[in-house]
Length: 482
Image (cartoon, rainbow, N blue to C red; front, side):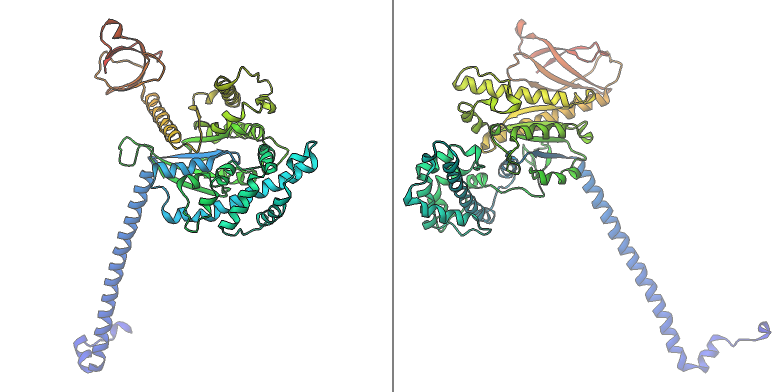
């Protein structure tokens, strides 16, 4: 029986088996050492896991304060130029390496432009009744053929002084100038004139693109690019932080838009109002303005944009104001009911207001009744005008922050009105609105949104406002010193 067996004491065993004593002790120590290492490893892993969780929590919290802006629009609408302006205005801009990287792009733009003009003149010379004015002079024909061949390549050579001289010679040819005047029919890029007038500088052996060169440079956007910025500077506590996403506008790029549609604070939609007489690059039977109209309508109806603010940039006004005096606005099907008013600046403003009204009507026609209270603003823009872009984005920032205040007021508004309260106010005087002010008064119980009834200025005190609540549930009247 096992229980009848007697085992010798351990010390007797060790004395009798001295050769085994050391290995057994070593094994026991090894087991203790392993347990200690496992314990230290577990502790280290736990610390790392806690650090990762802390970092994720911090990033999640930070993300909540970043507003997502989506830059949408058809191809050639100026979205990428706006994007580059934001980098220049609200970030560090382009360093020398980034500027140099645009050299090949700009040189490619030059070769592409001269090819379009050369091939266009040949086409017009074959098909137009007054074809002679589109015929390139004999001494320039060989130059034209050579440059057209270079423009057809996949890789373009660096723009040398010799090439620049040839291009300038062809550019000055009367037939090319006549062709350029019909550039809207030939997909001539907007940067054509700027680059053709700067050929000697662009071909310098030590050429480094300027910021203006980069803004004019044409690169078709593919995929998605993003940038983070604040219109009032990162150091300002009141400044909102935005993450702006730019996506390709051509039809084959739009399938990439969908996955960006969630969690958007505002859509900035660019519409090139100067392109009412032009056709799409990817479909020469489709008017660009009609494409923009249909695209804007489609974006407005997306379910995920139910509460999303819309900022409409009526872009390329600088080109529009020159073109509208030469090309009737009603050549576009959408604008066929347009009636010119006069000439000069008055006609430009009349035409612009007509286009603006068309987009406003489209917005309200395409917006469901329960969405009409979302923020919708229209801005006249010229993407190449840095001062105007800066001013526009500050206005966008103000509109979105005002929306946040109103949303907070709606969220915290209570039915009852306390008999008295101490007010802290945010007051904004609206341009061109005389004595109108907007005031958000907060107190310990709720938020109320007030609008001006009258001002005390009639009675000698211009710094006192009498205000009344716009909320039908409140009958509060208040006077606030400013």
